Amino acid sequence: MSTGRQIVCGHGGQINRLPVDRSPSRRDAYSIAPEEHTMNVDKAVLTFAGFVVLLGLALGPVLAAFDSWLGAAYLCVLAVYAVAVSVSSMTLALRAADARMLPWLPLVYLAIHGGAGAMTTVSDRSARRRALLTAVRAGRDILRAAGSALDAVIEAVRMMEDDPLFNAGFGSLLNSEGGVEMDASVMAFDKRSRGSHVGIKPIGAGAVANVTMIRNPVVLARAVLETSSHVMLAGSGAERFARDVGIERCSPEALISDRARDRFATFRQTSAVTSDGTVGAVALDQTGALAAATSSGGLAGKMPGRIGDSAIIGAGTYAGSLGAASATGFGEAIIKLTLCRDAISALRLCHPQIAADRVVANLGGSTGSVAGIIIVDRRGRLGFAHNATSMEIAYSSSSTAIRHQRLKPIRAAAR
Ligand code: ASP
Image (cartoon, rainbow, N blue to C red; front, top):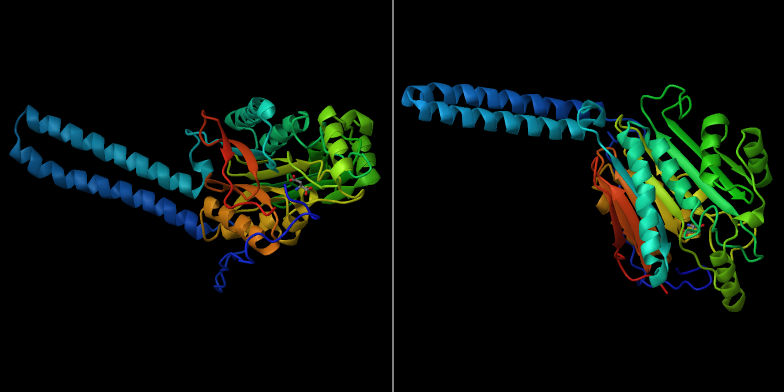
């Protein structure tokens, strides 16, 4: 991955800005548009009524024309066709309106990433693929069993934090003095929530920065969301809070993997500040709630005390009424552009894939830096993009299938 010291603007200064909705009727970012919901339901009911009328109109002449088995068979085919089209169009319209209206059709929308950065070594490829698939499967199973989007993203990220292949939790990359300093954040949007897992309002957010003794920073970020009146805790205060809420602490050395030691040795020779392997997840659950979580050891060789985007709500993590996003890449650029918030705002106007492409292209064009993002919107549509050398994701977009993908960069990374 490119770094603060190495970055050059590699995109000719071209800035691909997102279109901004300036209409006076622009909705509040946190409100579900009730008119849109009603419109979809109306469309479904009208479609169904239309087919019933058509069937009725067809019935008379056909009966008159065929007083035979052929007529009866024709009518049966017509009836089956009308019912099939009605049910499928109603299903599509209801799915578009609100996931909660399809209890018989469990929706499982989850995507995770293992960081944007350098190409994975050949020896690690299959292990990383397996790790991503295992984490996405665990999250998928939670959603399939009617668990919450928040539970699913926390579990998927927690599993990746425990895996030394990733730059989060155990295996975090080391700062310029050889120490571990980790960031994590989580955000959830649940419009039904009245003081349950996301607090008093429908939006809940929790983050920790610069923690050194916590094996699963994402679990601590969730505790900040659920049991504190704050959004972010840092350093020793966060660690004291962990003790108070019963989250196990460990020695900082216990979080240092052999891989991180090797990377530190490389840093001492080259002084290159690099990163990859940050982890994140986004999910939409069966009730329509959305959540995103991100966790990172940050940049290898960073200054002690540096806080990256993975701890910053709106930059590395965001969830609102329109969708949820998790980012990875050069944190300083992601923070300056509030990448995830920007991507979710763009969902008012476009598909998550277009939003992902645009915000990453904008970041590359305006800062010359590299980043990646994953997005799920409130209809369960997914979007992924990065402009680094490599980024791997895994996702589940039905109740059964899970997939791993090595994403192509949208354009060459600045080097
Ligand atoms: N975004 C992380 C940071 O800057 C690093 C990464 O995603 O690789 O701390």
